[in-house]
Length: 367
Image (cartoon, rainbow, N blue to C red):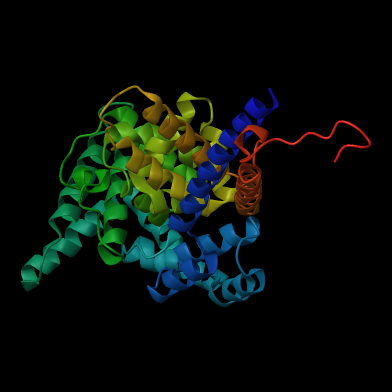
């Protein structure tokens, strides 16, 4: 009985050890450093994204807090910059360079004058023989049509969503471009979206703290309109932090979230991004890799063990980083101790294995 219990505990230790290795691996492949991320965005000229990474690091006590505070102090927008970007850069020039200029651009677009302005700018470029942005031209024309017609009660929503898509395209054309298979690119290429889908796009913009750059980044990570519902839920739960999550995980993160949601663990998965972003990012990538693996047999002990180890491993990876490494360290030490114990016990000879005659001493005078 005791021997059987020892075997069972050893098997459990091996199982826990393998799962903790997988959890550590998730943290390593999803490594996230808010300081390095912020500096990367600053070097690329994207203050909004840098300030978002800094805020995320400070709110969740990640990275070097003092360095994050100093970096925020050097790059935070002043009141004068906000006013200039809203009214001049955004409303007048129609350029989307940050959150504030994006709001100015969108406000002008919703008043029709923005679409007229964009059509005029493209016409002037054509006259000068310069390259014309056909995407912006087409969407501006559509925007004027929906604004003037106002055919249905959905006209305002259609106009707002199209203006948002157009402004997002402007931003990404300047900073990094559009992802090849993204929904934002498809929408700019003329893909028609249903009213409900346009409504989800607007809600993503709302949960992005009304930031066109942030909403554009989210939409550029979505490949299909079917993913909009999951993306809206991600943004509703994480708000501005959802932009960082989707930037790092994309559709992989959405699929991992959808699977966790089927087991009533969607909110836990998303909130784990704040506790341990490296683990959540790693789980998203690992989940996508495991989903693509096809075993020779759909059922069997090997498949069952792999599923059990991977499930527990990804669950452990969503715990705070210190907890992941603690489980790994303790399981390693306990397993090493168990192996040494088995090794010592296997060297003690049993009575029936002893060579030579067995000599018994039966009395005080026996020789």
